[in-house]
Length: 287
Ligand code: AMP
Ligand code: MN
Ligand code: MN
Ligand code: MN
Image: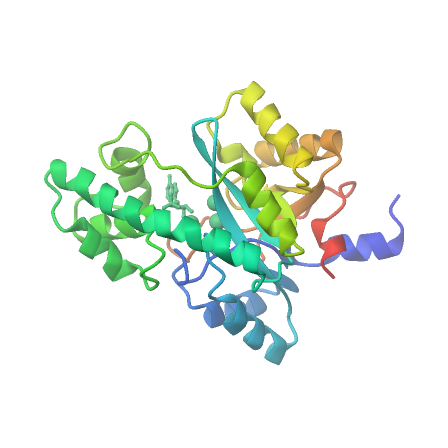
C-alpha cells in the first residue's frame, strides 16, 4: 500500500513528452501550454526533436498560469540499425554540452532532408524539399512528418500515416539511412545538462528481443534512469509489457502523450492512462 504522499504523486496529471512548431508539432510552444492547461495537465514537459528553442516561450506562459513546467528534449539516436528516441527531462536547456550536441544533430538533419527530397525526386515527386519547408516552421528542423504533410497536401496520399507506410519508412522509396547520435552521447548530453534520460515509446522500435535488452543494458550503464511506460504510442498491452520491464530493470516510469496535433495524435495532452500504482513516477524527481 502506498503512503498518501506517494498516492498524491501518482494522481498528478503529468504529461512529459510533446511537440511544438519548434519541431514537428502543429501548435506554437505557448499554445501547447495553453492546451495542456485546458486539458487539466499539472506537470508538463515540452520535448521537441533535437531542439530546445521552444523552452523559454513555453516556460514563460506556464509561469503566468502557475503550471509546473520542466524543460525537455527528444534526442534522435541510432542503435542496431534503428532510430531510437531518448527524452531528456528537467534539463538546463542552455547547457553548452547539450546545446553543442543538439546543434550537431540538427546539421545532420538538414543534409538528410535534402537526401530525402532527392530520393522522392527519383520517383517523380518534384520539389519535396520546398514543400516540406512550407510545413516546417523551424527551417533547422525538417522532419519526415513535414514531408508527409506536404505529400498529403499535394494529394499524393490521403493521410500522414499512409505516406509513412508507402514512402518514408525503411524499404520505401523516400527513406534514407542516417546516422543520428550514439546512445551513450545522448544520455551524456542530457546528464551534463542535469536532466533525467528516458527511453521514449519503447514499443515502437523494430528491434529483436536481444537488441531491446542490449538497448536497456547500455542505456542504464550510461546513466539512463527512466522509461515511458504510458505513451500515446503504446497500446494497453504494450504499457503492461514495459511496466514489467521498468520493474525488472528498476527504472523510473514516465507518462507521456507524445502529442503533435489534434489531427495526427491518438492521445491529447494530459489524456494518457495513469501509471501502474507500484511504479515510481519519474516526476518524483522533477517536482
Ligand atoms: P524524423 O525525426 O524526421 O525521422 O521524423 C520522425 C517523426 O515522424 C516522428 O517523431 C513522428 O512525429 C513522425 N512519424 C514517424 N513514424 C510515423 C508514422 N508511421 N506515422 C505517422 N507519423 C510518424
Ligand atoms: Mn515527431
Ligand atoms: Mn519519438
Ligand atoms: Mn515525440
